[in-house]
Image (cartoon, rainbow, N blue to C red):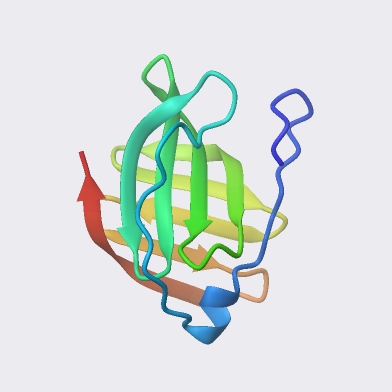
Length: 122
């Protein structure tokens, strides 16, 4: 898991990205955000539930949870530009763009996976 004290993030590669696994799932109840942060924005793509967590209304974390239950990633945000949230981990870049309604994951090899944001929860 994520430790806010050490800044360590857990990266779980989601099989859903590779195999297009379908699952019926709903956003989780309760707070998925680390520490004292709370859900600031929430959306879903074909394979993931997506969260931006904030502390004192300042976005601080990106959280992606695979709908098929294979894993969750919690990362500190590396940049916020309007409604575009970026997080980085070990060469992977996660860009959650609420303006364009899409999630882009860039792998260390340069390969990109782009998923439309199907729903934004307010």
